[in-house]
Image (tube, rainbow, N blue to C red; front, top):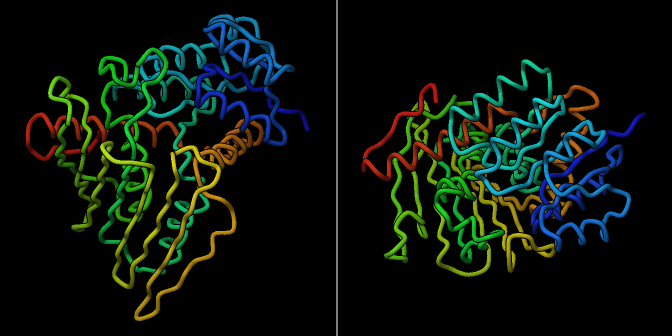
Length: 344
């Protein structure tokens, strides 16, 4: 079977993990990398000598023979580069957030559909042996119909990002789009049986008086049909990286937790417990959980989508919903009122 030829655009801290993941996927071949800085270009050549190194996305798209392009760039560059990838006739894996606007996200969906190309969005937690197992337990009916979820993250401050982009509101768009977007996606995924979310109400504050737009502490309530709701909460004013998901249903409850010295650790601790009636069961998680592991599974799934036509684990439509929930939460912060989500 012919390998799927993959081009990678972006070779910063997270881009290097993407390159490692591509190289680990059977049936995928990393043939091209676009890296703008001299330092990153040299590192890409040293670490992946079989790949041709380009100094711009434009050069890679014009010169490289690739089937799938993986875009790992600062958030403000997602839309223009993703559009160029799809217009060039290549399938696309686009890191979250899909774009910084609902309109641009919809434009990419429409473009991929017209071109008959795969458009996948990087919500790798869906591939997690831990967070994915939560969804499996819900689907199996172990807790009945889910009624309430708390998805919480306690962590150290964000990294600056190349050129400090993550702390530039014009480039990052909103800090809600940076990491809480994963938890909005999980909440919608876990409550899929109830239907799409109906409204969101959010609160936030900052420990930086000169940068109130950077939400060091953020919480939101997402309302689903039938009175179901999810609470999403994050603080960047703490230490290490600790995530939990607690979900209660009509027949039971579950509690998943993940901890590491940092988000990209290869040595996390994690656990999953489920209660049915009076019985509390520890669920064995045989495969390591963490974004550095899930990234490999995500790349494998997207490669399968390109080769076999299987749906990607997170589609463009899913990516748009995640962007919409985050932007509506940002709107709620500004208005102090719940904001409707129907129709995005």
